[in-house]
Image 1 (spheres, rainbow, N blue to C red):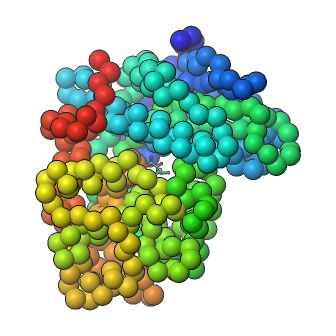
Image 2 (cartoon, rainbow, N blue to C red):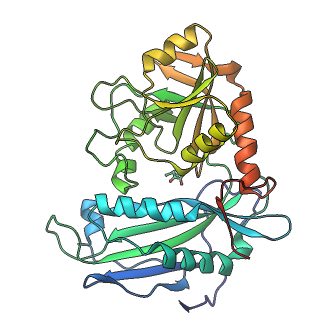
Image 3 (tube, rainbow, N blue to C red):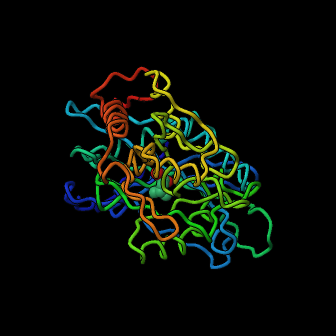
Length: 351
Ligand code: COI
């Protein structure tokens, strides 16, 4: 792969104060699609793209992305967490948005080369990682509403800390009763840009009311909980860990799947099912809702301390992280940071 190194390496930020997605490394991977085929990928210095104002993605949002993390342990061993699953999901999103698929093996190889080149940007402070953002956009300069004839795939890298400013403190989530994220048959399962744009207004309203994000309900009946947008959701009811089933409108989270695999392997009761908001409220009132948490690449495992619904706050586990959430956080991050043996084949070593 052709690599053009930067002549102007950036000054690295303070790795103990990263926040999420604010800093970007020196290089990125870029690959263009034209005349029905992908060209060779290249690593180039990180820089803005020039785009014609008529470019497809700028008008019709034909764009998809992924998020995954690279870790460096105390011995300098560099790893990726389930990168192949992200590339496979990106191809699923590509099909939904009429975009070309990637060759998973060659993209995995290219991704590894990029991370190794940028290895000094992988932070090692607790809770930090190098976040990879593979992205694909329609780049043809034409205004007709049809799939673009040209595409750009790129991967940018960002050293990150916790996604929520509150870190591991439980978050406050508002159950959204008016707006919806994705109807069945829509793009809810795909990781496409429009899903996130469409979520912003509800997020702003929730923030004004003192919540961090919203928990979406299904678009048809406004009855069943779906996901939070930046994370899938789990509820511990009667000692059973319940998560909304992937009915077609919910993002199939890779961290969600990892949580389920851990629970099943450890013999802890769990269910992928339809979880109604009524069931949650009833279980809360009867003291049977003992924990709630979200999962995601950026969010990792994030405890939810408060669920706002119909003007009331359901305070879960005294607004403290509960034992199952804490166990899963330790287990998952233990595997990701190499403190625990990976019995699942999730870790891909780069050196
Ligand atoms: C991720 O967890 O990687 C996400 O894509 C969620 C959000 C930051 C958009």
